[in-house]
Amino acid sequence: MQPWFEAVSIPFGQSCLIYDRQLPEFAFNWHYHPECELTLTLGGRGTRFVGGHVAPYGDGDLVLLGPNLPHAWQSVALTGASRSHRAIVCWFTRAWIDALCTATPELATLLPLIAAAGRGLAFGQATVEMLRPRILELSSLTEASRVVALQSILCDLSIAADRRELSTGATAPDILSKDRRRMDHILSWLHAHHNEPIRLAPLCEIAHVTQSQLQRIFKRSTRMSVSDYVTRLRVGRACTLLMETSLPIAVIGVDCGFSDAAHLSRKFSAATGRTPSRYRKEFRSLATTIPSGKFPMAPRSKRGEL
Picture 1 (cartoon, helix red, strand yellow):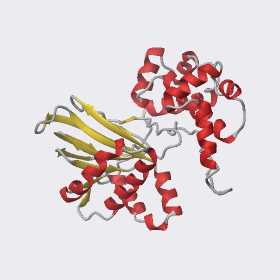
Picture 2: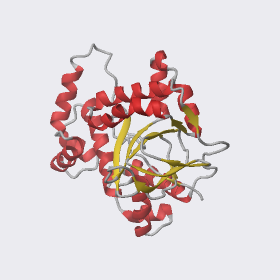
Picture 3: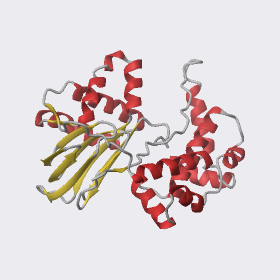
């Protein structure tokens, strides 16, 4: 069965996305994405599908997946006193790992780890017992502490003696699924036109689908609506302009596709927990504490980095 493409949206200005998934069951969901994925599964047992590998999993299942590796978890039953099936999922990109290893040679062991993860890696009980508390803590950490903690976890995985490869042979999708091709066209159009009024009709024409099909495919791939996705694109662009320019906030709002400064402020505050003016003030305050020429420029908003 052809896996469907999932669009993972790593937040703008962050290196990873941590998701604490708790559900009554894990339904079979055969999919892939360009991001690497570290998953610790808790509180249940079932069947794990990774590429061409199929095996049972139980409480404390820890797996690292490389880019574009099809996978799915299907739960069977809860274990112990658990009330829900739980998975701590960590997404990050191969580009982030490459950049880390280029800047910090001491992290070079991460490169063969990610290469091996191209077929999927499962880790033994000793490694799980060592890392379980640290992985569980990730979602409660600050953004800066979280990214440092994830690097430390990956370093420990890179030297784990109890890891084993899961899939054999070719595992990446041989051809793009219809959903992937459609989403590529849709996302390209949205990224080029996000500062304009968004209408579903041109998107439906691009993807050759009805409006209901468009909404269903988009929600399944991104876990958000078209309007929510566009709002995050606009907020990401506003972050860049607030950091890199002295443009008035009202001008930034219009440039990014908001109707006025008040509209920008509402959406920006909901997404970041700060008003645009406070965000700019905090950035400039931080910049003054770092020697001239040492402060990194804000990354431009890219697909998968909203």
